[in-house]
Image 1 (cartoon, rainbow, N blue to C red):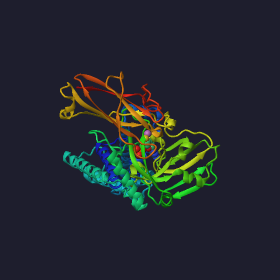
Image 2 (image 1 turned 90 degrees about the vertical axis):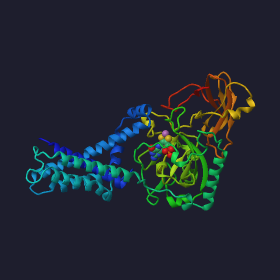
Image 3 (image 1 turned 60 degrees about the vertical axis):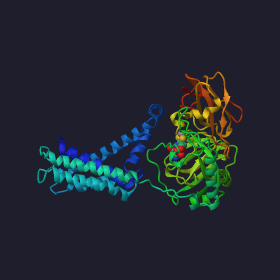
Image 4 (image 1 turned 90 degrees about the horizontal axis):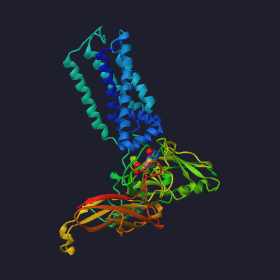
Length: 509
Ligand SMILES: Nc1nc2c(c(=O)[nH]1)N[C@H]1C(S)=C(S)[C@@H](COP(=O)(O)O)O[C@H]1N2
Ligand SMILES: [Mo]
């Protein structure tokens, strides 16, 4: 069976236009046709491949997976279009291919996304591309005939139109973000809003204000984000609920409104991903607003000591298992930095488990199942050990040459005033001290620490300043946690249990 160039070009154009049209309408939401394809790609990728990609490619691994999904979706729709062209060829009725292609691509998109209306944005452009193909390449009985050639000018115009449409769609879709998050006072009391705002002000106030060092609370838009899927769920308040199931006295389900009517608190909590490199930046802090999980657990009567653990499930198919004990201090957050949780961080409600690696801080949480036997969670199935408490770390993120006029008290001493700074975090163990060495670990000095913010699970900033003589200095930093334990020196990669070791950096003066 011969496929002409005109047919291939038309089918590919239909594929591109279908995906582009979908993006223009749905943006990066689950209604975008690529979303289910991407989820499938992620799901079918073996754990070793995922883990290697995380190690070798970092965030690019995820972009690559998304690129593959886009290509697959284009290919799938092109295949549908090609089938439609085939049918059209056998029919005497004009525009059979257009109708067949439009209908088939709509059905496919509905099957994939479950969104009939948005799927019209796939079918329309596919049909349009087929119509342009049929009208543009050849007219009359020889439609789609393999030897019919077209003028170069027509071909270029058609490709230009496809590219233009795709460009406009990307531009339009990029602005479609799903839920918009208003202030928490939309769903809770003004007093809670004020308290959150006060905590934010206090964090800003207590930040050491070192140039190049982020504050004690991370602005929401720069808070790191880790998702197993490339497209985040987009649940609404009224469709969302959370159930406590499994080994419980009684199953309990709460809707969003009910949850916000429970005892609401603000908490400052730091999150850190087990997959981040030793001096990486997948660690951040926010003021969270929500309710203690223990209130729900009591209601469900989950207390039995025969129960070891819990399995927490989310809208995106993510699930994590961890000890029941850790859940008892956990928090169900619906606010972040004084505003509703943004979609990327788990709208409408996420779990926060103090002192534990980010991975069990399940976003878009929907079910807490109490288990009497252990199971493996999403990342543990892929070889990670990230359900426990975080490792202690002191980061070194800022190195500043200070204005020499500030070094006045040093008189004529040769060298330069140098400031080094970073954050230190030890989960609920807390940070007691951070020490720095400017001679590769020979001697150690205590650094200045930011005043602690309220909360059990909050990082601190550290800062140190000295006069460095000309030459190279190996600066090393280590934290001592609230129990007096020095951060272990031995280096380990993030995989599988989180990075360990002391961060060091060469400072040349
Ligand atoms: N439902 C769901 N929850 C999730 C994830 C996810 O992919 N899906 N990623 C986890 C991981 S690995 C981390 S480190 C944290 C990151 O939270 P953040 O994106 O709000 O920073 O969320 C955790 N919770
Ligand atoms: Mo993570």
